[in-house]
Amino acid sequence: MTPEAQDIYIDNWREAAACLDTTGVDFFPEPSDLAAISRAKAVCAGCPVADDCLTWAIETNQDDGVWGGHTPAERRAIRRRWLEEIRRAS
Image (cartoon, rainbow, N blue to C red; front, side, top):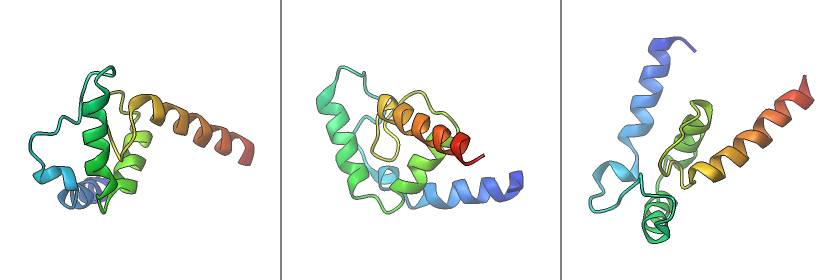
């Protein structure tokens, strides 16, 4: 994907994200703030582009925040499995 196409793709899914118009929810809570994490995940659960968001966060190795309904620790586990699948396939 060209950089220009990637920019368009990112802009398109972000424009449809449920979090775009959400106020009062912290999508970058402290890891110990389970209530805030739950609130962010609840928004993601109803998001039409949560899968795109999660894919982007994993592909770009986002270290902070709730992306696609997953915490950094959850994304690291998903990324490890994804990379293992790639290694096995090659």
